[in-house]
Image (tube, rainbow, N blue to C red; front, side, top):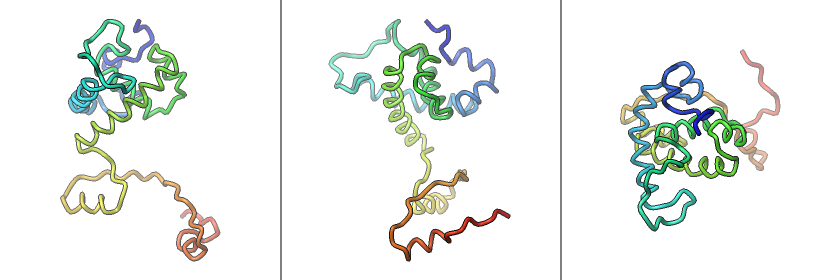
Length: 169
């Protein structure tokens, strides 16, 4: 079953490979698992994988897609880091593409809940950033340029665009 599956027990043996596949160091991952597991348990105790309300208690089965919570977290983190085609990601975890699609959408939501509970969600507004700065929080800046919609009002456009590409110094 797990011949080609990227699982925790195999990946944790090589920290450099773990970092390249998952995007976080092994000790960081182990901390994240402590937040992820209760979020997953809270979800799966109420809903099925397909999102329906659960009628009976979820039990671990031999044919479960993921052998453990760590492999489940590796699945979504590696997808988020590497952004592979779903077909390729499905093959790496020994499943089909529709199944991978279902798990990706489900686990993205659980991961977001996890990051909120771990207080690791990125700031998306200046006000949120200012609040963290006032509180004295450690802040990591993502220097990635993000596209913005071009304003339709010509006067507002001038504030954002010179009309010429500025040379880099």
